[in-house]
Every structure is written in structure tokens, then in C-alpha cells.
Amino acid sequence: MLIIALVGWLVGFFLFWKLRTLDSLDIKRESPRRTLSVIIPARNEEQNIGKLLESLSRQKRVPEEIIVVDDNSSDRTAEIASSYGVKLVTLKSDPPSGWIGKSWACWNGYLESTGEILLFLDSDVELAPDALATVEAYLETHGGLVSAQPYHRMERLYERLSMVFNLIVVASLGDFKACSKESRGAFGPCMACYRSDYLKVGGHETIRGSVLDDLELGKAFNRNDLPVNNTFGGKLIKFRMYPGGVKSILEGWGKNFAKGAGSTPPLTLILMILWITGGFSVGLRLPFIVQHPEFLFGIVLYFAYAFQIYFYSRKIGSFSPVHALIFPVYFLFFFYTFFYSIVRTVFFKSVSWKGRDIDVGS
Image (cartoon, rainbow, N blue to C red; front, side, top):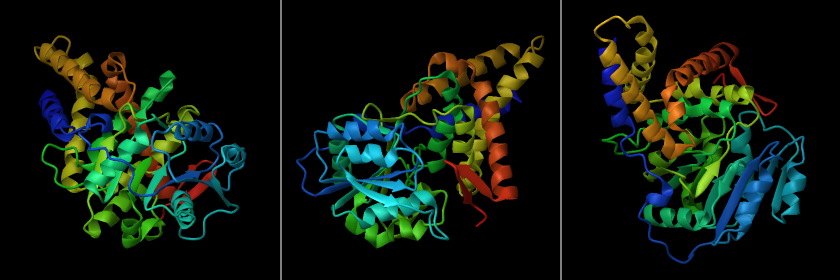
């Protein structure tokens, strides 16, 4: 069992080898040459939308237009957005048959936009003053689709339950592996591309029915021979995920994790399973080998896993060494949520999010 844990630990370094943050990249910054449209899909985001729009108002690179798409909200999302003087698109009904809510909102935002560059931002994103200029420069450097997973800012203890999920999201894309050559998707909270490329791949309309909209949009760019480049927000782009309690974490991660596992390339999935199994097994086995000669090796391996988890998780969220030391707790919650996701996806064929039932039967 401990041999499996050792192999899993070594696999972890392979999976996360190229983890990089946006603020650490060598990006050539130039004065804006193209117009920029920021598109924000928002459903019941009265707690977040003001923070994002406030951070957009402090950008050194001022966007030509900011579009908030109010996706049939039942709270003050539209009212707050209007107070910032942005262009407001109001959707007064649920998405048409065959569409997922977020893709429908993004598509409607695009239809109202005019910019040569399209930047899609989730409502819970928070931007440092240099963020837009850096994302734009990153796009100018690489082309295609660029995305950044925001740094996960947390305030309460229960929010740390997302630790393993954050790491699994990194591993599942595959482009942070030691020998990766191509990304298999993108990070949904922050995605930028040229308008012409968005039209070429068919935009959100071509992936309208997928709950994994970020992964599928990245694949659409790849199918059209356009590159996908992913990174992490670091000091420039942050968000606070699921502040509504443990239930919001369960529903948030559970709504697409089973689907995500099913679309992960076989080799990457096997490596992820090895890493997860190794981490959980070393924590599970230790109490049963206290009097066994393997105990010392098990202790060393446990702390080695904790160090590895802390080394990488601190780059993507506000996780401390203490949280890394109790990593088996987070693995247990991961297993519970993954089981919940399988039940909702496979048996009920629907998931719930922000007061809306989403059909995932297809």
C-alpha cells in the first residue's frame, strides 16, 4: 500500500510540473492596439457583481465597453450593475431548449458587443489594476484562447474543503504536466480571445448544451487549429468561490465533476487516480501500522505528500501548511462530493445551481 503512495507522490510532481501564474510570466506589454469588450454573465450575483465592477473601474487599461448579462436573476444583480453605468443585457426567461445558462448569457453578451477582443469574466472575479493590461498582452503574445484560473481567496475554514478540487482541476487540463504539448480545455472564470477567432470556432453557440463549457470551448479552439494557453491568476486575478456554506461547495463542484472525469484523457485520468489513491492510502494506513516496521516510512511519506500539496496549492489559493497537514480530510470530502456528482449526473441526470435545474442527461 505504501508503495502505491510513493508512486502517487512521484506522479504528483509530473502532473503539476509546469504550474505557472500570470504575474510571473514574461509578457511583452504594449499600448492597446485593439478595442476590448468585457462580458460578464451574472445570475443572482448581488454579493459579487459590485466588487468586480469596482475593480474594473480601477484598471490601468480601460476597456472600451463592459457588458453585464443579467441571466433572469431574482435579486439586485441588475440594479447594482446599472449603478456602474455599464451596458446591461437582461434575459427575462430561462435559456432556450438545448442551451446551458452560462453559455446562453455569454452568447447574448457577445451579440451586444463590438470589441475586437472579447474577455469573458465570472461575476465573482476580482482584478488588480494591472490585470486587463496583462491579459491583453498575454493574448497578443500567444493568440487563440487564453484563460486564467483566479487565485482562490478564502475567508472561512469550510472554504478550504475546495483544496483537492483546485488541484484536480489543474491536473485534468493536462497542459501543466511535465511533457504536455497541448491543452484540452480552458479555465472558465477568465477567458480572452479575438472576436474573429471566436466567430471562427462558433463561440458559445457551438458548445451551447455542455455543462463543461470551458473545457468544450477550449476543444473547439483546438479543432480549428487555434492555440489554447492557460495560467493562474496569481496576484492579478482572484475570486472567492462558494461563500454560501458547505452546501454551495457541494453543489458547485458536484455539478460537473463526474462529467469532467468522463471527458478526461485516459492517461491523465489514470495518473490522477494514482495521485489521489496514493494520498488517501497513506493517510488511511498510518493508524494501522503503528507497531509495524513500515510506520517510519509511512510518516515520512505522509509529510512528503503534505509538503507537495502545500507547495502547489499555495500557488492557486490561500491554503496554509496546516491545511496541507490534514489533507486526508479534504480527500474524504472530495470522495463524498464526487459520489454526489455521479448520483446527480448518472441517475438523476440533472444538477442544481443558483436555483436552476440543469439537464445533463445528454
